[in-house]
Image (cartoon, rainbow, N blue to C red):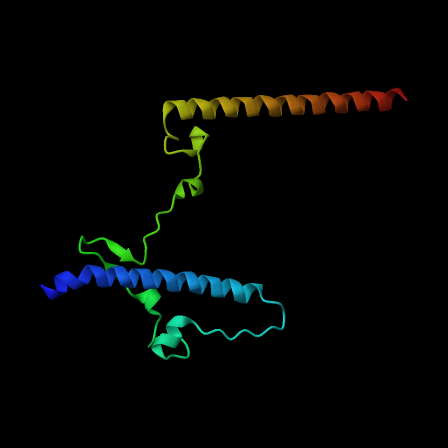
Amino acid sequence: MEFDQSYAPAVAKLVDLFSRMTALDGKLSQLYLNRPSGVNLSITNPELMARGLERFDRDHPSLLKQVQLIAKSGAQVWPPIVRRDLSSTIPVIEDIRHSPAWHTPAARSAREAEEKANHERLANYYENQKKESEAREAASVAK
């Protein structure tokens, strides 16, 4: 009964505290990054101060990174779950030949049409090369 009554407020307090500590840690990081060259800042992380530690290590990890808090509903409330939209990282396949439908009749006909167009382009190129070569030979014989 006591656990049931005190659990939700305790979790809410810890989430609030962890959120503020994370925000402060971000501000401290920005402060360190933006300090002028040669300026020595020795601001201690609040979690290190509260726990009486000099640094985090394997035996004394940061609670902000290790603790997971679960609400009574079963949902994770710490660390916050960040949903990311990965649609911008998935390539859009516009060419059917490079899609999962590469083997369909539509893809086959598109591939055959491209091969035919490429064959015609190469045939025209070599025909023009041959004509130009013959014209150069005829011009050199005429001289």
